[in-house]
Image (cartoon, rainbow, N blue to C red; front, side):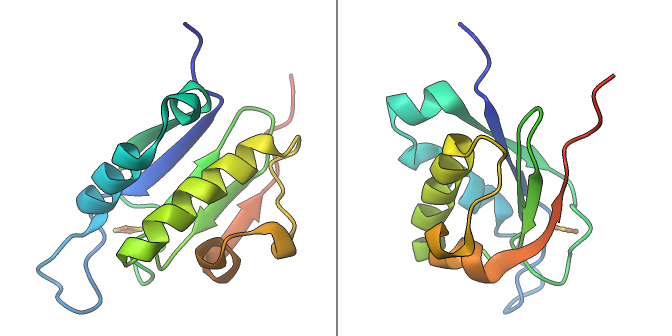
Amino acid sequence: MSQPETTVYVCTVCRSKDDPEVRPGQALLEAFDARLTPDDRAIVSAESVECLGVCSRPCTVALAARGKWTYVLGDFDNAADVEDLVESARRYTASETGLVPKKDRPEAMRKGVVSRTPPAPKG
Ligand code: FES
């Protein structure tokens, strides 16, 4: 079986804006993973990561795939955002370049873009 095309990295050490003792990333990661359908799992995998350098916008996630632009997104902090993250991963995977036009992004992705980075040069 081949590796899923898209990796969704979820920071599991971000601290909640409401309660700095809480680190909500692990719950986000588990909720995201639980919502993936078998078809999703063929194209998307999820991994925890310790800090994406955007600690002021918890939870922070990144969408990445070989040869595509990488998005770093912030502010995924409630249950509704989980569904948006699943849909964001689907739309990202469906895009040839990884770029998703703003009008086609789920709300949490539209509001949460921290950065987008072009693919690494070939060679
Ligand atoms: S701790 Fe989550 S981005 Fe830094």
